[in-house]
Amino acid sequence: MRLLLTARALELVGDRLAELDVEPVVLDALPATRGASGTVEDIDVAWATGDLYMDRDLARHFFGAVLSSDTLRWMQVTNAGVDHPVFAELVRKGVLLTTSHVTGAPIAEYVLRAVLDHFQRAGEWRASIADRRWEPHELREVAGSTWLIVGLGAIGAAVARRAKAFDATVLGVRRTPRGDEPVDELVTLDAVDRADVVVLAAPATPATVGMVDDAFLGRMRSGSVLVNVGRGSLVDEAALLRALDRGIPEVALLDVTATEPLPDDSPLWSHPSVVLTPHSSALGHGRHARAADVFVDNLRSYLRGEPLTYLVSPEELSS
Image 1 (spheres, rainbow, N blue to C red):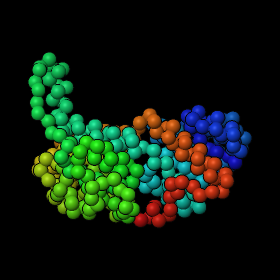
Image 2: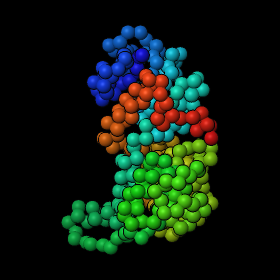
Image 3: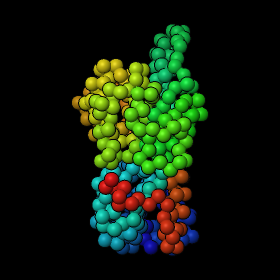
Image 4: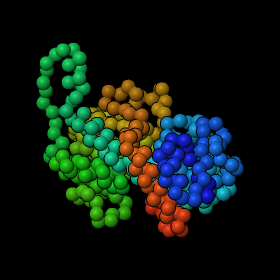
């Protein structure tokens, strides 16, 4: 069996691949293989690792190879979201697609850090210390606040557990509840008026795109915080800017935007109530080893003809 992967990915699992009946096909940024016979298209399995998303040329060649392959039967990705059209096209061709769900920890830590930074007005401390001014100030506490987490998959659940550890009351929204959600109460989006912090951790689907609109934002409470670590398309950005100009929510902490990279002329860059990061909340260094463990476990299952973990259904790509 021939496995398409990057050089970085091979470093992570090379010793374990040696124990299996697998021939690695290493893809460089240039459209050529290294150290393997056959062509890039002549592959059985592909593993799309996080380093692809840090190198556009490498990603373009990798996904070009999997799309042009007539022999590919299964691909695993490290990202949790599969809303990009390339994934729907692969599933349409009959390719099994699995995800990894290994970024919950860094994204949840990002969310807590971002909210704490705003609640504690940390920027004022940094500015005063830079100017050698000893100016203490009071701060908001997470304890006693109410959080609404929209989307309770691996990421939303990780955020919920950490917020509860800070003694926040956590409300959760989930399309299909399972009964094991780590929240105090399952609610609908109508509960947004109860929340001090609203965290978007849902995937982009026809049901969620644009859900944060004028009506949603109009129900948010004074002093509330909006955090988006899901997809930029969940938010109507024009509506968000209007709401921020009115003062509610108090701030938008955005790790994702509708268009990425964010265009130079976007007003989000300079709005005083927007804090931006470049889709980086998932980039914790521990994700690589976790992704390797999930992939190798799935690879062993695949070779034995057993069910795969985190298999994406066609319905998930069209719902």
